[in-house]
Amino acid sequence: MSDAIPILHMLSPQKHMSPFDVNMAADAGYKVIVPYINVTLEEVTGLTQDAIFSRPPDSGVRTGIFIGGKDALLALDMMDAAKKALVPPFELSTFADPAGSFTTAAAMVACVERVLRTKFNKGWKGTRVAVFGATGVVGFASSIIAALEGAQVTLVAHRGVDRVIKSAEVSKQRFGVDLIPKSGETPERAMFRELHEEVGLAEEHVKILGRTRDWLRYEVPDQWVRREWRGNYKGQKQIWYLLRLVGRDCDVHLRASEKPEFDAWRWNDYWVPLESVIEFKRDVYQLALNELAKYLHRSPPERRTNAVNAP
Image (cartoon, rainbow, N blue to C red; front, side):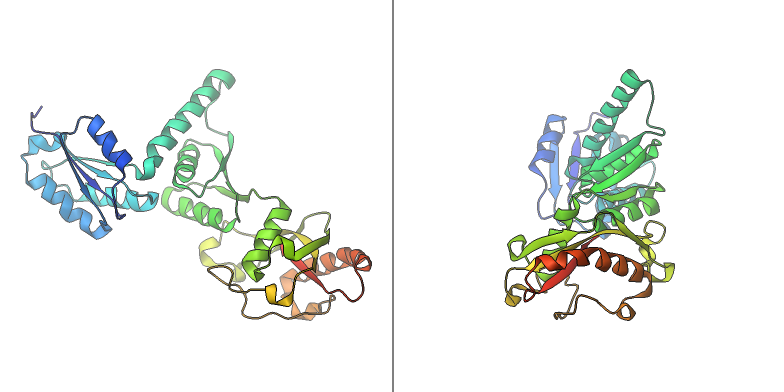
């Protein structure tokens, strides 16, 4: 083996290299540690070839490229670019661990697998797994590793389900695994979140008059589903709430979120004409309005009411 000085080139797409990763590299025995920041995917090939062609082939085992950052998919793309840039016999070692997620996820999956085998005499295959916080890099990585080992994995979102739907879609495209997206919020908390995101109202601006007892469901025709969601999204199940506005009209703020969903609003009669509702949602509207109508008499006639649904 070469006695060349061990060198580690540390690439980060962010504005700084993690001090944690630098410390780990030093403790691992690297004598020369060089951080590179704001590195783009397109720059990886040139940096890799600069590293391999400046040393004799037998020094490749003592030359490494580490890829950090916080984006798991970008880190994998950068590692793939580094591998493709190698020109045998000029090679080096490559390793990606954005935000420590890959090593943490691998260790967590290994620990759970040991418990499964020692306590239950089984492995991952067929085991049902719920991953909470699955939109983070550790949750994302651990869910994919478990799914690749044969587990049935559900991604549980704590704040809306759209992000885990996207994660499930990417996992299918990149790794060929089927992950099940699911919301982890209570219906009431989901309703208050949606209320603020969509119309800018806070919890203190409204009073709950009632809600539907059971989930109401509708399926979305394929032509109405976003192309990137097809296969992972069929429709929605909803709990509907009847709210009384105890704040003022000026408390409504349609630009409360980064991606506003509405351009304007108005007060409307409770009994919405079903002809104004898109066809595949009409049955849900009818069921919800019929069920919630019984709560109306509890409000003074002069007070206005507004129905909000929580997906």
